[in-house]
Length: 132
Length: 132
DNA sequence: AACGTTTTGTAATAATATAACATTAAAAGT
DNA sequence: ACTTTTAATGTTATATTATTACAAAACGTT
Image 1: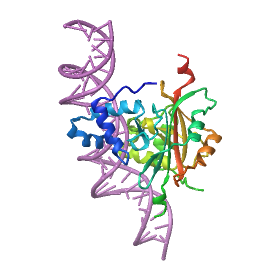
Image 2 (image 1 turned 30 degrees about the vertical axis):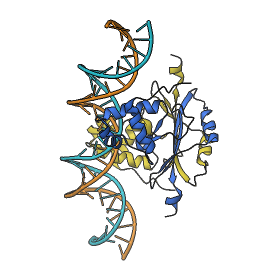
Image 3 (image 1 turned 135 degrees about the vertical axis):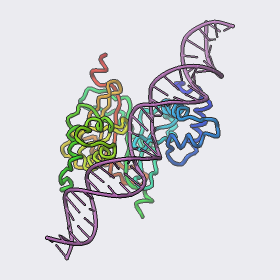
């Protein structure tokens, strides 16, 4: 149950930034934004990101190489993620739909593989962009 | 119906290579392999890949930055893709499950977004790696 | 305090991807 | 046939994303 002991300084700095952001942040954009806080090298950012992803505090939006804070309070680990992505304005929202996650968590095919993790990205036009 | 006119020389060279491969290929690995065929620069490969993805002949495995040939003969465009990925041996298989694709193609949430595309990646251990 | 582990700092570099521009080829219209 | 337009190519340079390698510091035990 207690996977999440406490965050180190660097991890906290990066998490704060990602959580404050209204849009997905790229690693180097994070780097530029935390340089005044002492994180000077890409690796410091990537290491913090890796750990934050591992413990489920943030997720990586794979198709965008960008990171968002987890909005799903019960997300201990990043093992079942779904996003909606607007292809026009690039707005990304984490989908929190228990039916969907139930369906995917229990998905089985005939390959004999046991899935313990998935990542789903939906693409389309958000309401705003649709009406333009 | 006729989205697929014919492939250009570069596109065909890249497609042949990806189709022959038993594993996902990375862009620069493709580049090294087609240099004897005259494609000397990354951009030539990326352009061919872009087009091939666009017309559905290949798919990008986002979490791996790699490309696989489409095994789904009715895949005119890359608009609904699902993969299983072994986290140990990195084997990637395109999932061809009509129930799954039906479910995801008709998925709706309350965001007001109309989804026209999705990409899903399942992770786990394949049969072989599970038994090690 | 001594030990093992994790995190940090730092520099260098690898891997992935695109911008910009000139040229050539192919498709479509007249 | 020839012009126009569109798409693909070739080339160089560069931007972006991510990792390797190694030394030092901080942390948690015992």
